[in-house]
Length: 210
Image (tube, rainbow, N blue to C red; front, side):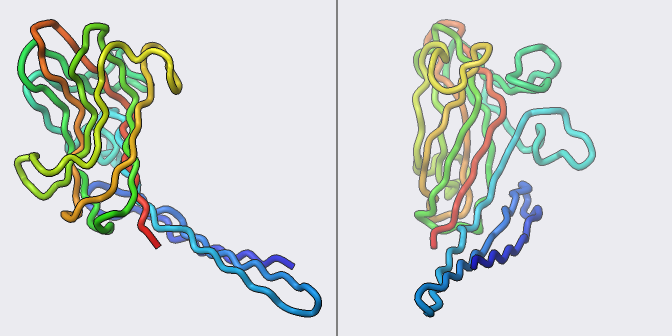
């Protein structure tokens, strides 16, 4: 005999609208040779941040454009045909200096060392040589906290996972720092040529250990 007990506590909370996923408790009861054997498994607590860069409408401020800020040559497009899906996307473009889209994300329900994943759909120019998708610990308000992980971006997003219309999904894992928040950003160093990155469907999710 198998007994499944499900406790669904889904809901929104937090400044950035993290989603609290269902936590399920499974009781598997087996009867063997007249002896009852019980095994229990609890799924970890998960929060997810998502942004699709669509225009904000009532109730969609979390997933849309609110909260993003920009360094030099960067901004948002809407209805220009540059998105991965929908109508909105972000972009970074310049020939000099550091340029980026940035977002502080509150992860206060997690502890140092908890496991997280960051992902985004990116399209990049052929001449890009020094781009980055990164996550930093949010311990410093000027954004110079420790880099928790990052990937370097160079050239077009050809091949790999889910290449569609020049977009490719990029992702990496990282472990939470000690501050309870992170800085997610995508940017490039200008090298004298007109290089660019287009960004859509950003997701950051963390799972509490234990």
